[in-house]
Image 1 (tube, rainbow, N blue to C red):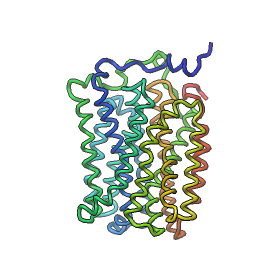
Image 2: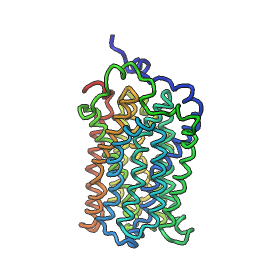
Image 3: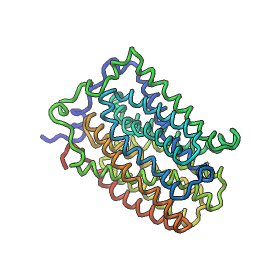
Image 4: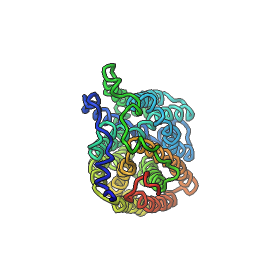
Length: 420
């Protein structure tokens, strides 16, 4: 007799954590939240002061566009290694090392004297962020197998708060610290260092056995009987990678260029930073709610359509009246950016085992971020070539339409193990 989806979930749910793993769930949850909070400031803090960074370091528009493309490139390159590192050292240890790289890179970036050093130190931080991106869903499934939707929503909210806080507070921090953009960006190294503390406690000698390498955990019968599926042969995996890549493209274009679009329309630097904070801040409440909605839907396509429609409306507003309706466009773009927690949730829903989720997460995120690389760079180049934002906005509209189409396919009620 064929099992329903709910029946499959009951039979294929990952094994419950050992007593040692259940010892301090609040500590793991705190680590997840603080980690998520620090996985975006390296990027979102830059947008409000991008004009000052360009002037100080002598960047052209194309080079600045390259700077906005560095995050997805690093996520693609370094994210591939995350599952292998987690198998060898344990996911919590790898996340700890990643956070250390984030803090060090952000601290060194504030001393960069030229574009090359600025890019290199930014890449160091982004390498640490990359492993965190991939391993967050794995840690959730490992420690909270019965609360995937709720915990994903919790750390998605922290993602948004970190991005919004960095976008909205970098200018005030800069002004309070003498008006130098370097001081404003350096603040976020301290918050990354703070996030190390919960993972140090999790990895204390008394807990090391509890967080050993991933293969040490008991494996479900289905996983023991067959190797995890090859993602390159799964249409579901490719659809999810495409959706993840296109939503990331839209997000990084917004992070990198929305403040400049507003400033070019006559909006002050401080207000442009606040508008970006609104865009990113909406992900806090919606990022908590949407994963729980997504897990209750048999097909996530309608949710993808609603979010994409908000993005299209926001682009239309930026085309017609970027300054006059700036706050409305920021709200619409903020709603559209919530495709990210939906994509994360779908990663957890499109595979049945922890090993499958780890492989799917690495494949979808690394492939998706690789697809995302040209987008922000092309937006900067198109702006340089045309001297305005209409052509870049038209390009962004085409990408959003593609995101909706591939997201509808990724939202089907299928798993990578189904061999489609």
